[in-house]
Structures are given as C-alpha cells and as structure tokens.
Length: 352
Image 1 (tube, helix red, strand yellow):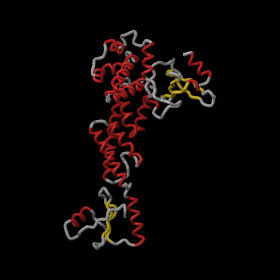
Image 2: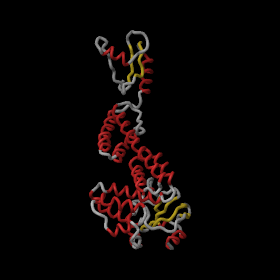
Image 3: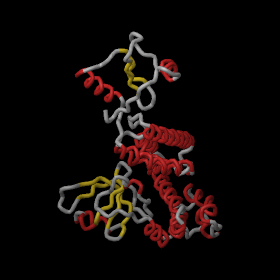
Image 4: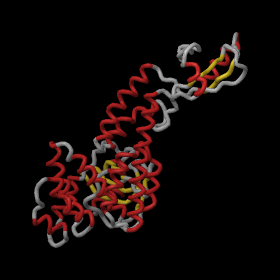
C-alpha cells in the first residue's frame, strides 16, 4: 500500500456520475466497486465485487507490476531537478547542455522511455523525445547534404555537432551515417577538421577560450590551404572572432600563398592539435581527437610492442613529444609511447 494512493469516491454528489462516465467498470451495479487507476490516469482495473484475503495480496502485487516503474520520493525529486536544468537549456537552443543534463537519468532507464507513469518521469520522457526528434531531423538533413556533395564542409561540421550533442540519445544512428561515408573521398580528413571546428565553436562560448580558439582557427586555415575546411573558417572567422581575418591568412586559406604550408607552420599546427590523451591506448572517444598536422606517406603497417606480445595495424599520423599518434583501420586514433614500441618500429620512426 506504500506504493498506492487510496481514493474513495462519494456517490452522493456529482463526483460519481462523472467518474463512471470516464471509467466504465465491469460487473453488477453493486458495491463495492474496485478501481485501479495508473498515475497517468489510465484504468488498469474496474470491477464490482470485493477482493479479500490472499486474493487481495496477489491482486495488489499484479497491479503494481503493471503500473510501470515506481519512483521513490528521492528519484522523483532528482528527475524534477534535472528537468529544470534541461528545459532551460533546451529553451535557449542549447541541446548539447540539455542532453548532458539528462544523461544521469539513464541510471533509471532508457531516455525517452523510462517506463514510469509518474508526472516527472513522463515530462522527462517528453523532453527526451523532443531532443531525439531534433537530432534525427538534423542527422537526416546532414545525410541528404553529404549524399549530394561529399565536400559539403558545412554539413560535415553539422554532423560533428550532432555527434557531440546527441550521441547519448542517437549513438547507433549517428554511427551508421558516419560509417556510410567513412573512407569515401576526403570525408575522413574533413570530418576530423569538422570536429576541431566544432570544438572551437564550443570554446568560443567561454570568453577565456577566445585566444586558444583563435590559434586553432589559424591552424586550420594554414594546414588546409585551398580546401573546404579553410574556406569555411575564412567565411565565418569574423562572425566568430569579432574581427576581420588577416589578409595574409586569407591568402593562405585560399591557397594563394606559397608559404601557407611551410614546415614551421605545420609544426605549429601539430602543437595546436596535441591530444589530451594520457595513456598508451585510446579512450572511448579517441576518434574525436584533433587531426594530424603532419604525416608520412599514407598506408597501414603493423606496429609491434617492445615485448612482441601485442600488434596493431595502423597508419602513422604524427609524432608528439615522446609519443606517436596512429590511425587505425576503423578511423579511430591511438597514441602510444615510442619507448614501448619494438626496435624496428622505433627505427622506422627515426627515418621519417
């Protein structure tokens, strides 16, 4: 009974006729009439006749089992608190923050289908489904754009944002779209740059991140001279930074500067794109690392650990300090300490 709110209907006033119209019961018109109404107002049971003894215990357990997830007071309050933050973010067109705020609800059940009919849970499901639909719509538009033009860098940037913002809700759908274009044309390179652009745009939301964002944008411009990523950044630079793009940088972006990709600038780009990885194996989201600034001739090779027990088929990307960054066949990155590689691998790296 702790999970049930007992109600008694007064048959002497208008409550009873109104109730009977809404909830038709089975059996004779004799009392008692027993109803079970779920938290969302749906009738689970309505029949005349008393239920007594052990039958009442069995009956009550069956109804509770059919009533969906029963929230404790603590969980209901937690959902309400999360909803306040997520709704505010969603109303401010910040779906990334909204999805992030709702992520803790996954401990209770699937987002958008928590399985509870309590009001807070139903409101949470409604908001989650709004976010899911927004993500699906954006993903559909991106897919259509890339199908028509694989070099549509604006669409690729949108895809990077969708992955960052909606992946907790649409991981499978997003992975399918990325897999569809992976290894086609210049998509891999463009998507790496697009994820960097997306992180720059996120960084610009914090005034303290403006200088770092500027360095990243300059890096993208110089390393992608004459290609869609540079053109996209040049087009939006003044909008993002609040200042016009330097003419020399513009020339580099357009590929009109012979010095646009001189080795010194490639080194600066590599420094800017250093990963925050700290281990010798890539984290779950290592495919979102900033792209390589310098690389050897493309091609997979087998890398072997110093003790010979482990191998990895991957393509060299860059050397960052005492570590080497590799791209695996599935497009994800791995960063490994050079000292942990075999003698032949270290010799190979010295020859690059």
